[in-house]
Length: 305
Image (cartoon, rainbow, N blue to C red; front, side):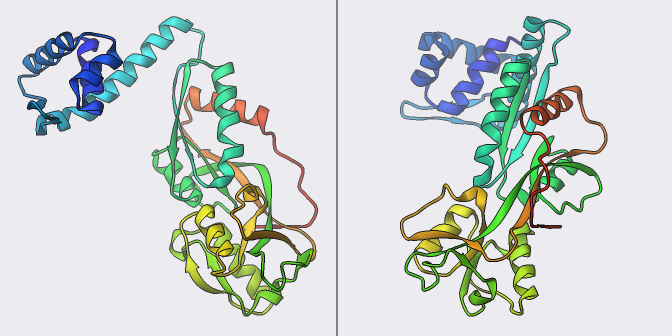
């Protein structure tokens, strides 16, 4: 079974158009048709339903799609290993990331890995919430993730690489917006916008914990799935929120950030990976990440754990 047939299948399955697929493969359309027909003959099934107006995968086509993609990934690793030589680290490492703060982590890591270990393919997997990363690492769904402490999963290891300061975000026309810093107790009667309580958000937990310490439970008027949505709702006047210094680049019109009064309060952010069975490629990525983002000194103030 020729790899060129498998590549032709993969591209056509994505494009569902013979002309566009042939253009991507840099072959004539009749040649693409021959490759697909030969693959179907080898497998003994029809992979695509073709009409004059459309192309779609058959049930058999859907069934082989995943295995073919995995075969092509394996072939790519073999080719890369042969090109780089036996001394190179070759493999695929799945990195799970989530949240607006990931923009300061993922690009420099990808660049550094590409420069230091070109035989490693970083496969970036977007997670809905960073709080899911430890469980996904423990289950093997991802190799490396990023999460805020505390991480309570005993099957993963952690290394802190930055600290995020907890801040207040509120509408620019709010009565407290002119203050340089805000006492948390002054927000006791305010409606809050927050991440859903059901997802295990460390920031949501920190908000509740800090508020209870000064004598109130936050009234969450609206929940939202990510920092972009939370801060947009705050800018629209729906409520206030506690947020993190790492997302100050999100600045919709009508929003202001203010410091919490008193000693700074931080959440620690860590890289997480499996405690056992770490492959050579994953360890190489962890080593590179430690070089570009070493463990920082503990900042002044309070670290929530």
